[in-house]
Length: 215
Image (cartoon, rainbow, N blue to C red; front, top):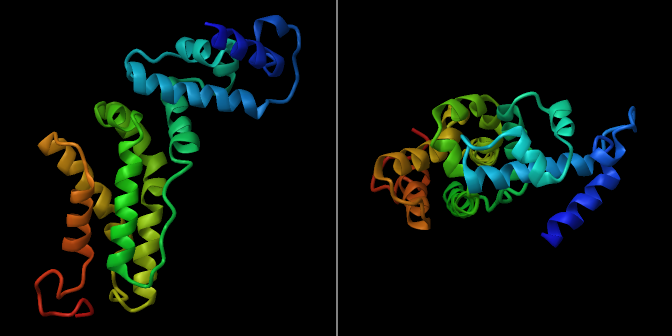
């Protein structure tokens, strides 16, 4: 409780809409308030789920006035989207550049699976089709950006043919991970990441085919 009181006291000092400062209007938005709200949103999404998450509960967790949230986000869906993009995905793994499609994809996919497993809100998003649909357009490019970079570099190195559908291939790892999780109900682990990299992004010899990737 003392931690919560301390946090509320700190937020009141920076939040122009906090109860003790209701009369202070016209001040510019403080990014610290935004950060507190977005972090609280992800915490509640993971702890209590999408259905129970409300603007009011987010405001209480962030120790800000409810109007501070409503001024920035009119719906909880838009709030969740910004929280996921700005906070949840802010520390995605670095994209390796080893000069090899298979090595890059193996390393990145392993890191990405570990990253995904460490985000407790990810499972909640996948469990609600309406939320997943709402977030799809805003998250697609962010989720596949690292895979896209790996595929594009491989095309430029002539490791993949010039007519390669970069966007389609970039979406494949995430699609396979999601598909596996939904159908099997099993947690996604490093073994699955390695299997995907070996099967779909290894050399022709590694996949057991004599044909070259360039054909």
